[in-house]
Length: 394
Image 1 (cartoon, helix red, strand yellow):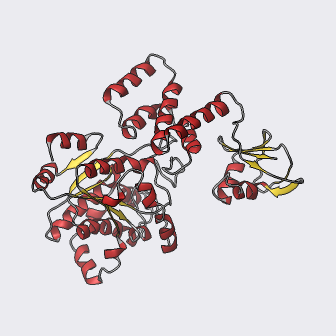
Image 2 (spheres, helix red, strand yellow):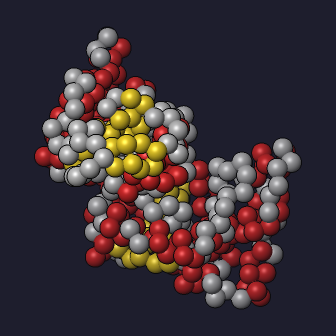
Image 3 (cartoon, one colour):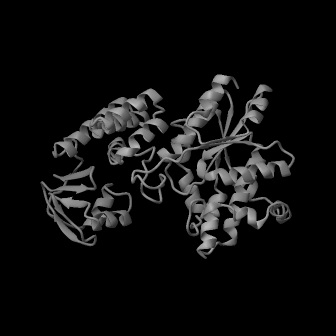
């Protein structure tokens, strides 16, 4: 890699271990094998995933091979990273279902024709007990307990189950199986990546270099973006939903989102920072941020439409012009949670009940807080769910 390549790769990163080793490999002229793994614990990738995937794109543009590992085997164990209690393991049916959309979503950033996509069950499911015991004999329990999440759980006497100890070992074995030159991911994965280096040496391979990325804070402004915490912005969410979620982020996240998602220059970041300090309304910068990110994952026109929709609904307190309609001949008696789920205002019935209980559902401006309430719908009624979804009865 050239000096310019190295500078570009190091931008917006946290740890870069083994840079010299990587450069020596690159000098041989053979494409590097860059590893990135994702457990299909949920069907959607979000902006938090985009941060390292964009870095993969940089490597891909330099001619290196991206090995995208779908952790169908490790997902059946459950990643304990960042967990204060055991993570529920997924069934094979759930894993298969969740993995379906991964390719389409990753394809929004990477060239899939130039990406090697592998499932780690390919090698992990056929490991013999003899081979597994050899690997386990190479590491001590005290090494595994050095993980911050395990340490905290051990100190608080929160149960740690035996299968959880296997997760970092199996993730490390992925690097052996594909002979990774570099592993890339979130900074919370550093322990697992270091374990992989050690395991590669055990198998007689040259240890992988490590590149970790900052963790994108979710829309709540507190925890890292996570599907399970509900503070995420999905890569495949419709433009209106994506825009609305981005407008809900706390002001301190404007600059980090500019930096990590839009890759804005230091000059741009400093300009935003100075103007906010001088009293410029952060909402204006947030509006620009939401527009640009929405355009990035949709189209220019969809980004502009989402902006106009937001301004109309939230600033002018008016109803949008393009409310979906439901035709009804007579008065209809329905359970509200079932109705809004059937008409795609919520993804699931359980989510519908949660929104209703929290006061996020109204008919003609009147809130409904009983999720089991039966309501009478008639011509002219306007149902609102959350801040951005409407349905008009005609």
